[in-house]
Length: 201
Length: 201
Image (cartoon, rainbow over all chains, first blue to last red; front, top):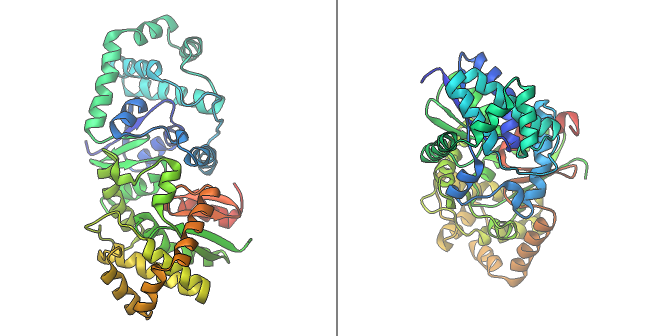
């Protein structure tokens, strides 16, 4: 749809966290709204024969430095989590539950709460007590949230999202589609901005 | 040295080609000069357990699209070479020969000539006749150039450059060091620009 920006993210992706902080304002400046999609980088990495950037020799140390510097560049608070990367399927299932039952805005608020918890406060969202606490702080029923992330139906929902993303060419995060054009990475912000302002280039 | 920008590139790297087109003007605006280093991505990829981006499923198709779009974004002419990537050790050895015997400016001119040949005109610089022709067009003695790229001393020079780059943390190209700070990728231009304008951030 012409007035949308599709934004794929993983709750354990530092560059997704940074992009999540600017994408709504950028979209709004150009009369667009953001449609978020929580996915699992583990699935897209496997499809693309990739790993987390921190898993590679040399690139790993650079990436840790670049995560923090890129956050500073955007003026976004950042703390490297002590355990990284973490499995994020539970947080992602809650995202899809909120999106499907309460709508885009509720899901977006959860995305922002989760990403900020991980990268501004170092919360280990993979741990059940931490995720329950975040849900409760966020005004959700922690028991209901836990039921969701253990529910085969929501597990299947997330699995289908991963598969559809891969089929659309998504191999990392953040990943954007604007008018069908794919943009990968927080650092494609200037290109997305030009596209929104001037159209295809 | 305070007034330098170190710029590592490979003659077969599209993002290096694009960066090579803006780096001198950016440096000059901030009272800096560029020190170029031709290297072989094959060596840094091996050290970092990486491959060319086009070798990965999903990422490959995106990268080909992004090379051309990133060139358009910078206003740089671009043609995807029909054979890619290509081995570039001969062009790189000529670079180091020029740098060590005639200085930075002569080497920079060769870097630009070679990168433009590959990515603006689709020249297969890995082929001896094409590289000899480029050398001649560039005002070099083609026989002398060919002697250089077959000379064990210049082979060793390039090998030492690759090893020193890897030891310094270089795992891809373009790769920059500004005041010791590492920046990887054509897309780090805005961060480099801020660093040059304001200092560390």
